[in-house]
Length: 112
Image (cartoon, rainbow, N blue to C red; front, side, top):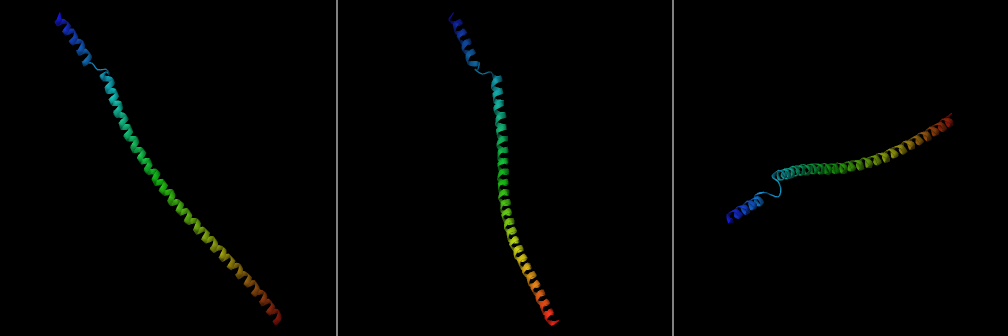
């Protein structure tokens, strides 16, 4: 009798210790999902790094274009000032030519 009880207790204990709380199928599924998520995380991390590099390159490009724009604006201002100066000189020359023409006509009138 003692032997039967010992056998029953051993069978019950082996049933408890040899079976797990989570089935192997669920465990393998969870491990596979964890591996898939780790791979996806690695891919997303690489993608974020690539996009950050692109953002940094675009910020540099925007800075360079801003400098080029500022240089172009300064050149335009300098050219506009030069054009205004040249235009003023041209008008002065026209006025001088007109004055000389009138003086020539006065001299021709005096001579005639």
